[in-house]
View 1 (cartoon, helix red, strand yellow):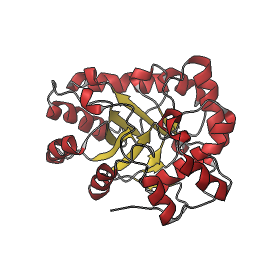
View 2: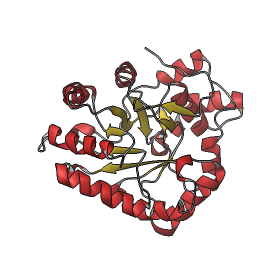
View 3: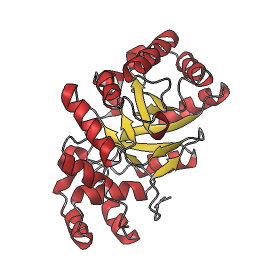
View 4: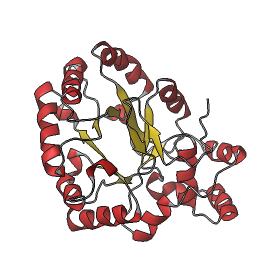
Length: 277
């Protein structure tokens, strides 16, 4: 099943009922003054979705950059590392993230990586508590395969915890169509990290050929491909030009044939193997 979004939707509705901007800023490897200035610039350009994590060690920087903006106008995602998935550790991790980000709530809090050594029911109960206390608006997972979702969704359902998102590596060199279809069927938003394959996919000539038709860069074609499939993309950039280009993808639409050409680039260029974690 392909879920090609033809309309220029700038956000998607999560299962939790909240809306998430379909383009966000990934902040992995951004730290200190560079992180603060990049997030500030992104906000000024129109970004309203900012993705961070405890393990990125930059939540304070993101919080500093967003200080004073209308909180309801922005969407902040953070992530709990696998070593912190015991019940009390999840609660404490969230509290620390809120303090560093200078906010009363997170729009989305994810399990960054699964941890088979900790009871998932124990973990999920903590996230349920955070949702009930309105410390987080939506809950999700990251680096989850279909098999893991199949195993853990019933556990979440049994305690009334809604899994709204799954953040995974997804780009034209890693077209995880089966995972996308599964998440669509379960009403779980798929969020693409490394949506440009850390630059590797920009070597693909088909992206350049399609880009010439629309006067767009290979990166813009890649991001448009993702969003037309209903996938949220969180590219990282510290360049103002690239930040702007990553936003300027809603004034053209790829044809079904062009989407299929990009689909056919394959599913083998994986940068990170979730089975190793």
